[in-house]
Structures are given as C-alpha cells and as structure tokens.
Amino acid sequence: MIQSPVIPESATPNRPVFTGWRKSSRSGGGDNCVEIAVSAGRHVGVRDSKDQQGPVLAFTLEKWVAFTSGIRDGEFDL
Image 1 (cartoon, rainbow, N blue to C red):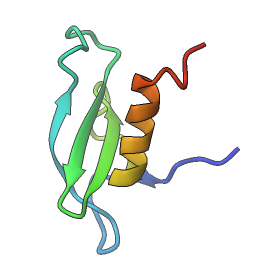
Image 2 (image 1 turned 180 degrees about the vertical axis):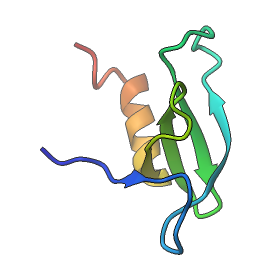
Image 3 (image 1 turned 45 degrees about the vertical axis):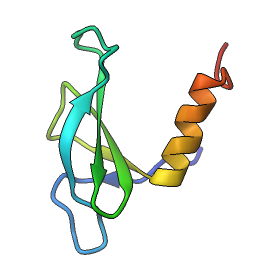
C-alpha cells in the first residue's frame, strides 16, 4: 500500500508551510471533519480538525484538483 507523505506543521526548507486552515461550509460543524490549507508553493494540506497539531497530508495543487474533480464526477461513489 502506498501512503501519501506526512508533513509536520513545522516545515523544513523542502516542505510547505500551510496557513489559513478552513473547513468545508458543508461540514455542518460536526467533529468528523478535515481542514485544508494552501501553501505559497501551491500545495494543498489536509489535516484532521480534531488533531490540529497532528500530521498533514500534502498534495500538489494539480493532484488536489484531480481528486476533487473525481469526487464531483462520482468517480469514488460506492
């Protein structure tokens, strides 16, 4: 199984810094949410809203757009 890289909140020179974390307006304010943020280097970070100091998954902007487009197009529907 291939895992996405985990990026700590404190960035090193080769890792993006994410600011402006936000939840989806469709999250309904519940506790089972993820938050996203975009870095200056055009990476998208995703983290568990309950563990804001925990690991962050990082995606290139292009991969994030492909993923969210797949969601909208029903590519991952069961």
